[in-house]
Image 1 (cartoon, rainbow, N blue to C red):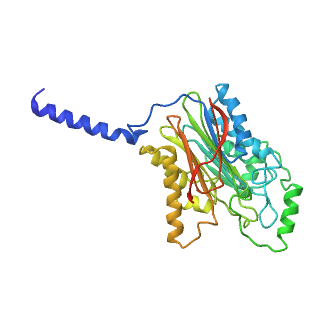
Image 2 (image 1 turned 120 degrees about the horizontal axis):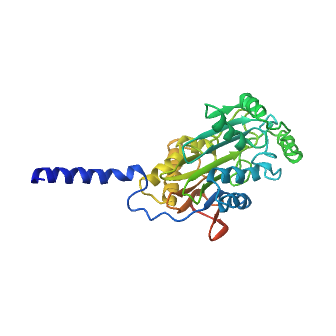
Image 3 (image 1 turned 180 degrees about the vertical axis):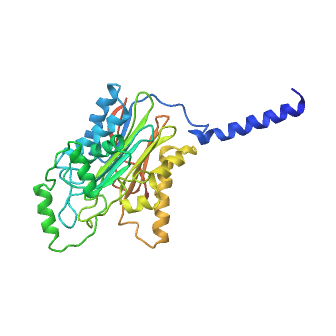
Length: 326
């Protein structure tokens, strides 16, 4: 090899190394920790984590873990912002939204789905049994029934009573950190190092019929890139959609940010967007959780009150993230 060819080879090799972070985690990322790991939003995530952990401990896929984990919330009539027992829209109709994403970028979602209490499993069926990625409204219900899901009344007595009381004034003002508009989002890393995520909600209580938030939207309420990491969101969905929040978090982790740093930057983008529009920050809540491919995790939110559940080899516990408004 002559001198000219040597320098040419050296420049090409250097350029190749410089491009490598774009293919996955940054070069300075810590080594990947051994799975499994599951992270979910809010304190009801603790019970859901228990279900997901059993799947992971048995060597199961992260995809199965997150589906089974969030189904626990969907099945519980006492969880009033998810699935069966979710609060209705202003017309008294319980409409559910959900999405799911696996390690191979397979995705499925449903929105404004009525009469079926497990929208996350309908979303998985959309992913696995149709050429589409999202079904909505009557079409989503038609598909669910054709797949064998049972049609039932999701408006439990407590929700119906509260809705009738709300009708006396019909004032629509979601309350920050009160579970009338929250979501369970769950992301997991299995023992093989694969990531998946799920997100499910009944949306804001007393919303306009047909309103859809961020929860069923891939890239907003949930995003998974098996080379980089996964993220999910909770809170006021319109603001998460505005910045394509979870896709942003994952892309920031691709650039080398820690999970917490990426979640914080996403919250700061929400803050900036609110300020440009002269909107209040104190009347909304946004929270992100994230897992990096290396097994590290983190969270950040707009204001105090959000918490998230983590289950790994150290056990199952509830964490409170740092926040912007202090």
